[in-house]
Length: 200
Image (cartoon, rainbow, N blue to C red):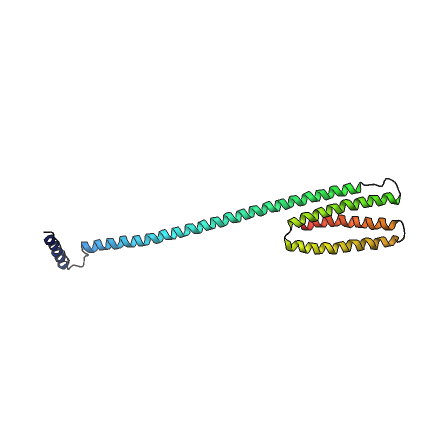
C-alpha cells in the first residue's frame, strides 16, 4: 500500500515538473532557492563568526601584550624610583659625611694632631667608598661591574700617585706624610661622589 502511494507521489511530481513550461520558477525551484540561500547564509555566517572569533583572540593577545607592557613599565618605574631613592639617600649621606669630616679639628697646632685629623678623615671616606662600592656590586649588571672594577683599579693607582707627588713637595719634612694623607682623603671623597652620581 505504501509503495502504491509512493509511486503515485512520484507520478504527480513528474507531471507537475513536465507540465510547467513557463519561464516562471516553480514552487520546487523556489524552495530549492530558499534552501540554497539558507545554506549560503549558514556558510557565510560561520565566516563572519570566524572573523569575530579570530579578532577576539587578537584583541585578547593585544590586551595581554598591553598588560605585560604596562606591568613592565610599572616595574621599570618602581626600579627607577628605587634607584633614584637610593641615589638620593647616598647623596645625603655624602653631604652629611662631608660636614662631619669638615668639623673634625686638631686638638692642638702640632703636626701629630693634624695627622690624626687627616687620618680620621681618610678612614671615614675610605669606609664610605667601600660601602658604596659594595652597593654597586649588588646593583650593577656583571659587565658594568667588571668595567667598574677595572676603572677602580686605575683610580687607586691615580690616587696613590697623586698623593705621593703632592707629598714630595715636603720631602724630608714633617709635612710630607700629612700632605700624603690629606690628598688621599680628598681624592677618596671625590671618588665617593663620582660613584654615586655616575653609577648609582
